Amino acid sequence: MRRTRQPSGKSNQDELPSGSQSQASQNPSQSQATSLTQAEKAAAKLDQKELELKVNDLVQYLLIMDQKKYPIKKVDINKVVLKDTSNKAFPLVMKRASEKLADIFGIDVIELQDKQKGSYILISKYEIDADKPNVVWPEEDNTRMGLLMIILSLVFMNNNIMQDSEMWHTLKKLGIDPEVPHETFGDVKKLITTEFVRQGYLEYIRQPQTDPLVYDFKWGQRAKAETSKRNILHFVSQMYDVSDPQQWTSQWQDKENEEEMEVSQANSN
Amino acid sequence: MASEETDPVCDDEIDIVDVEENMKYLKPLQDEKERREIRHKYRTFIEDMERDKHDLINPESDSLNERLKQADELYKPVKMTREAALDSQALVLIANMGRQKAQALNTEFVKFQPVEFVEKLVAKTFLCGNVLEDRTISTEKWSSLGKAVQPSFKRCPPFRFINGSFERGEVRVGKERVKKIKEKDNTVDKATVPVQVQRVQDTDKMEATTAEVERIFAKLQECYKISKNNPLCYFEFVTNPFSFGQTVENIFYVSFLVRDGLVKIFLDEDKLPVIEPVNNKETEGSDKSEKNRQVIVSVTPADWKEIVKTFGITDCVIPNRPSAGVAKKNMK
Image: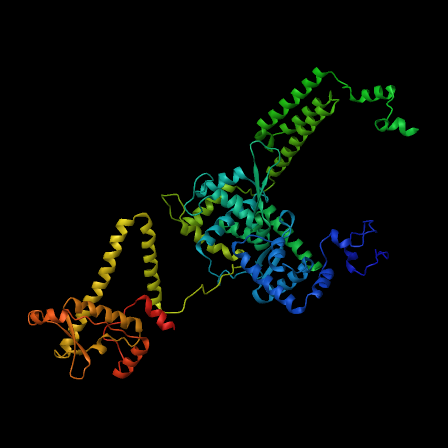
């Protein structure tokens, strides 16, 4: 639905929802995220060298900020990398930086949604071959991944949500107690409810209107990006000596649904 | 005109009839006592629900449905907003419990039991078939589980620089640094325990010097033996062709030896200074006169270079010491 009344030649009018009746505003884009074309305009004001510098700066910034695995905020990027440059150039600079990361480092930049919208995480493009692992991780990392894997498995197999009381009850069987400092993990409760949540591996949601407070565990956005239900189902099946993961009917269905969605998304892109 | 009747609040002149009309809306439709009773019933209802939560969530039981019917009954006498609000609170609670009940519902043929899963996990990965008496899982076991699991994640390794801030120079430089830091510690201690540390510092310095001096004396005697008890050329002995600083230090230490009468320096037939360890028994008498002679020796870097060139000194007789001065000279 083209609006011929728009005086400015901006092509982002296509992105406005067709149901909206706004005609008067000269700059509709300001109410929404700046589109790529407008950013390109802003970026054209920068000379190419400066733009290149900013893109490289952003690549470095992303790589370094990723060390702790906390999502990188757009606000910070604007403050640190773009600085004097117009914030409108952000989409273009980010797009170029993502391309560089993909080509040179094999890293995808993924924007988080919902609560963590406006922040970015780095994910490797390629899965590591289990038979020939080419990356050696530090011990702390390995121990955390072990614990995380178990938690993600529990949540997934429990229909993608698990109450905290049940989680703690189950983890106790592994010698993990939220009240007791753990030999390997230290303050386990903090690790699971704060650190993993902050990194985006888990979601720790409060159940509304309960007394005493009750929380639910769910997969976080990073977990969804880094691994898949198929992997987890495979892992769980290994534990049960089950050669056919299909016997977990609903979880298998769940995984199938997720894979279908991924395929259709990939096709539409 | 019409607006006066429909929007009486805005009017400046408030008609008495209109006021009574309005009061009709504000006056409670119900007896206060009745309302209190209803509210009380609702509150009890909500408390009971929370208390029995676990039973209500259990998919096996139908009690949630009954509660819903109860809530319906309670709502019948409700006429005012306050009680209605309590009713909606109760309904929200029922709805939440309904959700949890639905989640707990299991249509699996093979049901997932979290505890069972964990026990199998423990048996397989942590115990590896062996029975552990001590049920704690060590860090190593966690680590190996994690390692096995890493390929399931598409994790991007964190970016680290390969070379940290490194300094040029050999290991020697590191040792010097350590020494320097230790000295710094000493000065810090000085603030807190002044008397003690001062003493330690003095003796330390003395010991260091004395140790050096003794070492040089031993070296001299060794060289003297090698040269078949002939006096050694002074310059050849003290000069360190690699370091001016060390040369000066050598001269310094040798002067101690002279002061203590262990060594004597004199000019030979070529008027070049030579050095010789003193045998106390033989030359006790002449020592006194020798000791009293004081000479101030000055040597500049230029002189030092001259000496090295003239005497063709290629290697130091007195071994090189790892001291602060060396690295700097080398860097320059």
